[in-house]
Length: 264
Image (cartoon, rainbow, N blue to C red; front, side, top):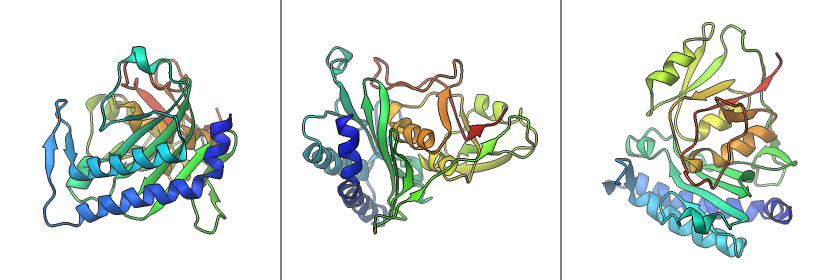
């Protein structure tokens, strides 16, 4: 996979690009006024989403010439066009817009690289802390370090019947099905987090399990998928236990479960 090798070799440049977008997001985040609009699907979008999208789409196409970008904040071509794409970047230039609006500090930039429907590389960047987490197929998952001595990410080993599993819940997007599912565990310890940092928490071994029984989009999960997998865990369809697929005709994800490594 030539582009996976290119990704690994370009990780410092990718960090620099996402940090540039992150700085632009933070400039707007700390400004006295932030312009917020409501999209046709009733989700909010800010000027930070738009600025970050412009920086990243231009920069990633410079670093990886010829690979299209599928972004939440851009025109989505029809599937008849997209199905011919071998590689595609899947981008959420500001995941956790509600966290951004409410100034919780929990929002991320999500960037995943899909090869024929399977995510093979990805990064999650946290603008507030300027930290990045990344992975590529067969190469492991890491917490980025400026000196190149990246810290390996490893999930927890877990058992479904263990009392007190650390289970993640969305801070701003709760739903009854997910909450009911969580309550089926034996005295779960609930951890609320926003945006894609839920996936990072599992990859770092800070949490064990994240069920999502409502629909979110491909760009919400793409880099989290490869980061958790390369850290030794899994992110799968809640019904058939298969890894999620990307650049589908319908860009909504099925209900899914992200977790550490099962021992039972």
